[in-house]
Image (cartoon, rainbow, N blue to C red; front, side, top):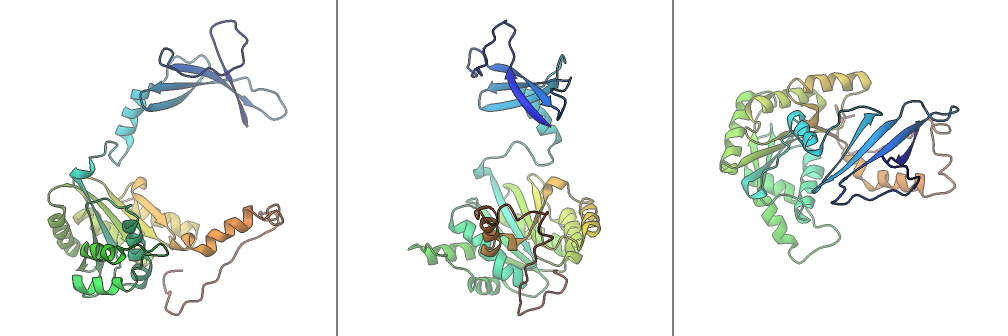
Length: 316
């Protein structure tokens, strides 16, 4: 179904130009006519109301002849009421971010996750007040964690003069806490350490689950009950694989949503950010030879094989 857009007016003018919104006339109403294939226009029209109120622009749809509509202020109130993540954000000076990398002693965290967070810090993409906690079952001190991850940190191709200073500053914000993934007591201990670093500020917490899928639900349960934020937001990033198929993925989602809302769950596959995968998009859309052929009509599936020199049990 296609939509055609035309301005409506109470006058008899037949002008087809689209009037701009200004302060004297802050609202314009347009008629949207759904175009039905083979039958001209559908009998039912919709009206698009575009409002320019301060810095907030709102668009609402209503059936032709309807008398109710949502104002920009009402839209904001609805979003504040329905969103589980607070709509009003505190100032940066009043809040702190704590990132907890669960599975911090594993290969994924050491080789991918910590370097990725350092890259964000290196490019000034993290808040000024942030702390990173590694959480894992292996006994380790804060200094041992820093030594381990320092071997994988680098300043990429655009090395700056202060590269080593940035690495040192990043490592000072990294700490480690040892515990079991299914122990609420250990997560309560983690919560106490996090609170010491937060210093009474508004607490925002991000959990990155770099563990096998069999541990996801236990970690989320313990974090939700013993180590979630009281006055800010708590979010969870789940590393691949998110189930083996559609059914197992849906079941895992149902299990996680016992403790989290959907807008608190972020699913990620770190391989999708690698150069090999990004080049597939270039090959697919920038090549005039392949572009018309790369579709479901000619390709059943695309398989990419990675050869690893360490175990991948439970991760694929």
